[in-house]
Length: 109
Image (cartoon, rainbow, N blue to C red; front, top):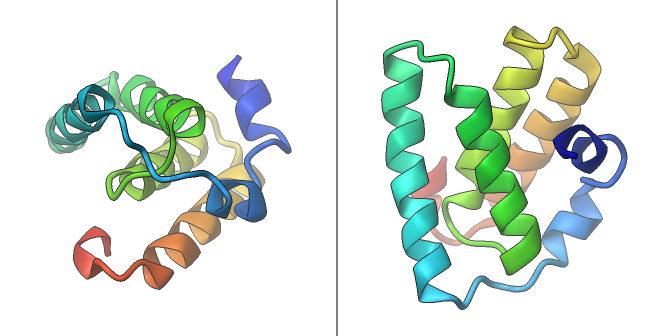
C-alpha cells in the first residue's frame, strides 16, 4: 500500500496542494511519531521505515503539518538505505527539501 503511495502518487504538486492538518489528535500523533523517528534514527532501529511511512500516510490522508517534511525525508532515506531504491528516494528527498525550503518555519530544515 505504501509502495503504491510512493510510486507516482507522491509528486510535489500533490503534496503542495494538500490542505493544512486541522485535527489536533493527528497533529499530536505526528509530533509523537517525529520524536519516535528521531530516536529510531539515532538507535539505528529497524522501525525507522515504518514510522516514516506512517507519517507520510497520515499527512496524505489528513493534511500537511510542519512535521510532514521530516516523515517524507525519512521515507526517502529509508528507500535509499533499506530498499536500495535510489531514484524514488532521491525524488522524495528533493520534494521534501523543496517544500521545507518554502515553508516559513525554518525549523524543519
